[in-house]
Amino acid sequence: MTDGAQTTLTPLTPYQKRLFGFLSVATFFEGYDFLALSQVLPEICKVLDLADAEAGALVGFINLGTIAAFFLVRYADRWGRKRLLTITIGGYTLFTVATGLSWDVWSFLIFQFFARMFLIAEWATSMVYAAEEFPADRRGMVMGVIQAFSSLGSIVCAGVVPLFLKTAYGWRSVYLIGVIPLVMVAYARRGLKESQRFADQEIAPERPSIFRIWRTPYRKRVIQLGIIWGATYVCTQVAVTFWKIFAVEERGFTAEQVGMAIAIAAVASMPLVFYSGRLLDQIGRRYGALVIFSLGALGVLGCFRLHGQWMLTFALVFGIFGASAVLPVLNAYTAELFPTELRGDAFAWCNNIIGRIGYVGSPIAVGFAAQHIGWGAAVQFTVVGPLLAVALIFLWLPETKNRSLEETAKVDA
Image (cartoon, rainbow, N blue to C red; front, side, top):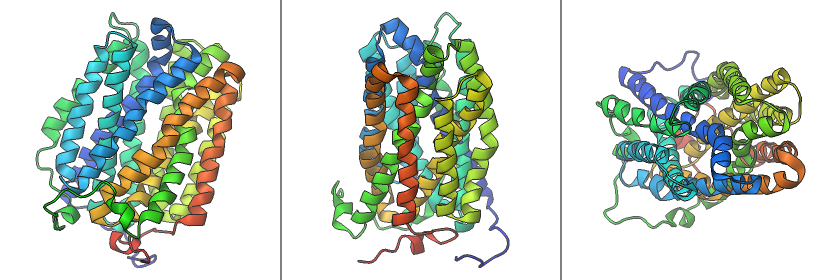
């Protein structure tokens, strides 16, 4: 389908609506877990007596789990989307609960490492599902709304963490609640079907090589998208993660003030995040990226530079928006620019290997820099990343708005 081919949106079938709801619930907990670490980090640092550099290293090593997710995500092309989604949701639930039972910094690190591994694999599989099962003219909207439910999970996390921290279990209760998604998914997964595009594929009997995509014409796209993912993560990964510790140490906020600011900013950002996917369907991936990445960069700059609770909260609205809304852009491109038989591999290489270098390296670098120049100055410098990413999108990537996956995945041999 090309631009202008129709004037009304393709209606969703009853099954597509149920799938839409299922994937939204699954990513809700991804958002909760993403924000949980930043919310409990100051308490963890106090309990474990960690310096700024050690806090950055802890986050960085935990985030190595997002790279390890590579070995799970690529099995979406082998086991199928449905099976892998069930496995990953169960895995991250179990390790999130285990985090609440950790007894020292090493057990906390190990359990969070595996929780992140399963969590990111679940998220990537959900996006592949969404790209393959919904019509081209609504693909951006669907992926945007599913990602927005991740932001909703962040809102809930921001709201409940201050309450949990006051309980007898303290920060542990933030993770012990992780048993909820396992119960919910056990019920919600009934009737879930395999992606039709995957079901129509002929699966080779032998296990494919881990490097198979590098022997195809798509290797250039892997490198390009991997660099764009990495440049984006350099900023978005640290912006939310370190904002609480910045606000407490450099702006004198209390835990309650931080919780209120994050909750208000997250709620205020929700309409923008929910609309971001629709924006991609209306003005296209490239110009949508220009709007989203620019607003996100300005938001991060403001929420680590300004003073005063309300000014910082206002800037944080756009910081949270940017950290969430860049993902539908890159998810859409990563799903659309590769064929069905390589889509899982493409996500694994672009996001989990190449892109996550920025995701893992950034908090470590920022943590060390913060010891010398403070959290605010260290994080502000990272806004270079998303600005570079959007420039590369215009330089390297085509417009894929309203085009079928079969059309967008074509590449010159």
